[in-house]
Image (cartoon, rainbow over all chains, first blue to last red; front, top):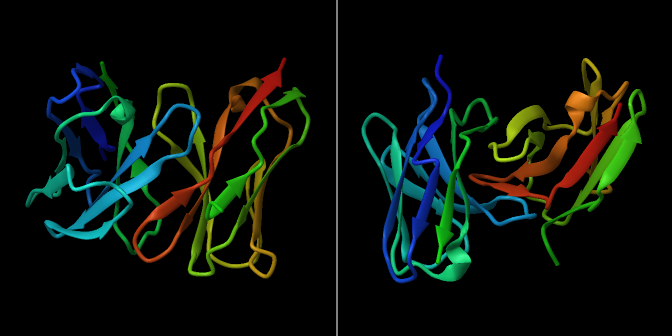
Length: 112
Length: 109
């Protein structure tokens, strides 16, 4: 059974650019969530996808968008990058009946 | 006011000590309560979860939930240097997890 895998592990982008982060969910999990974790803080919920539809969103602007694919993998897209977008981006998957979420190791994004 | 408040730490304890970690919350919609462990530069790893008031044990770990007081705790007995990490409490409502800011624990050999 594979866990949650994320790519890339590190990324450096320039302010104003766009970025796409990728996530493969754990086998058997049909729901994917994305979280942003700033240094020294707990993860903050961005949004969640279930059956390729967004079914929950946190307090993030529309320039944060996502997709879920038929194989339950997912992408997070961020447009018009700002310096404050520098953070660890975490993907988590679950089968909602289990209640527990499995996290990937994250993508560390640095915006300069 | 944040939905989830976690004792900030950091904590430094000698090997073999009991580690006590605490969180309070304000949202009555939270149904499930979890503790995650996060090592540096890694994603959070689920340690324990529960949905009812009371205690739940798993080896050296005990999770405690008091819904009437909106308070949860994690106790680590016989702490080991390998327990050195950041511990995050998390609570789930219908569709998302809300996390505390984390407590960094160092267990000294």
